[in-house]
Image 1 (cartoon, helix red, strand yellow):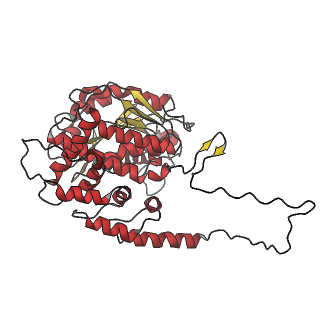
Image 2 (cartoon, one colour):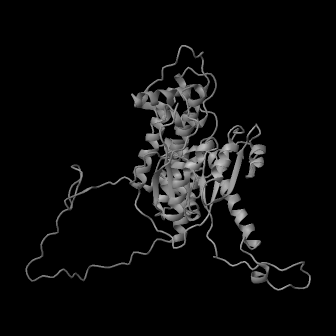
Image 3 (cartoon, helix red, strand yellow):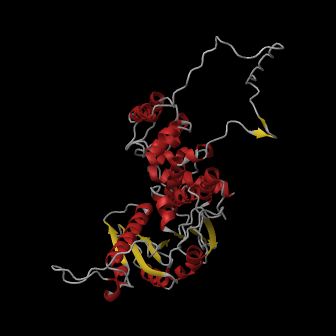
Length: 449
């Protein structure tokens, strides 16, 4: 368990379940029905993230509030849409006066031109709902999330994370889990058991503190880091939940590759939270490099002399000018914009790059056999890798077609693992997706062995 954060004086009394779903028509109805049996739940929102089956229709038939993305936008976007729909529903409830509204007790007097009394909207009468995020394929086991709800509604926990039992058929998640776990520990000091668990119940206050979310499958990593660094109480709680496990086939390998890419991106975005210490203190004595000469001790003054010297002049060092600092930051950001990136570098990403030689970095990135521009957080990650070795790996890979930037990021994170073994059943040349998935699979097998 992490350290306790600021417990709010007024806890939420109700919970909204948010279920991101894609092509889950066979399972979504059972998951919704099971979620409705949770004590405290009075709203279920399903976000259909670009399904090509009847997921939306089945969810609406199960009486869930359904919103649909026309195209697949990823897990983080689906979670954000679900949270937005919960907020919209609560705004509508407040405007309508809520379930406890009584015309005799709470309505404003009738006025000319109105068809009826208007409800009196009293701010602060009820707390926003907590939100429980569930996977769409949990079916009847979703009711086992009750301990997470109880922890948030009654025990003062701000973010409750499900500790799932071993899942039948699960395989090959070791490298992704370890990457996320170590990154969270470096950033916060807390080591989670299941850092990629997506079943979470959290207060609206904690949710707002974690915005913006990291994209895609990096969302769980970013939620944990941001909640802890904001001072909230995060706790892992055992829950007997079940969902479909990721297998060892090519589809499963591609899924793991996407997860690893997004986790690495999430950690790169939040790298500034865990700066490396340049000096360590041991027994109260500052440790110093053996190559660094100690500062000379000042010469003792002659007896009877004082250290006042009329020739000394004193000057006041002015405070840094905020406008100048902002100008320098903007100039730095403009220089970074020359790199092969899409989108602007944030302040955090700009700081993370430090005093890197932008011209040299630009040459090295453009020398990579990659088609397309990198995301700014990809560049933050790649600047700490051996780009020449990465370029050599990409050029010699038995691949037909161009690598995408996300492929380069994944392969860069496993350069030390060497070339992956290509099964005899796989026809050469591979496409970039297949080769990248084999890189991840080889790393998984290596670490698990």
